[in-house]
Image 1: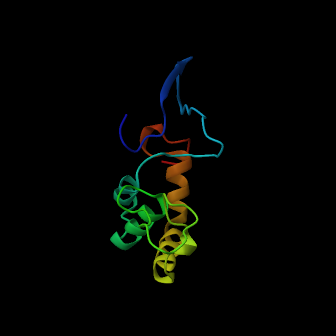
Image 2: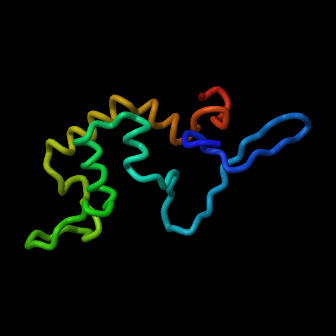
Length: 119
């Protein structure tokens, strides 16, 4: 199906095609998409500085807080308010500028498997 599709299953019923997304729920929180930041950076042309900040926020390998005297709330990742204001503002600016595209892609998907009227 490809990188941009959200559907996992194709159902044929009465000559109609329905694409269904199947998710396994094992966490105590809601999660829509498990792709790495790099995937989204390519999809939405995220600037390098914002990509790095999002990697820090997500705790991707190589972007966790270093062991030092500062007390971080989570040793696995940075909270957004633990990052400097320049980084925070760059992320907010990107998200605000691209919010419609991001919500459409994450919720509805892209391509032939996108929800009706959203491709």
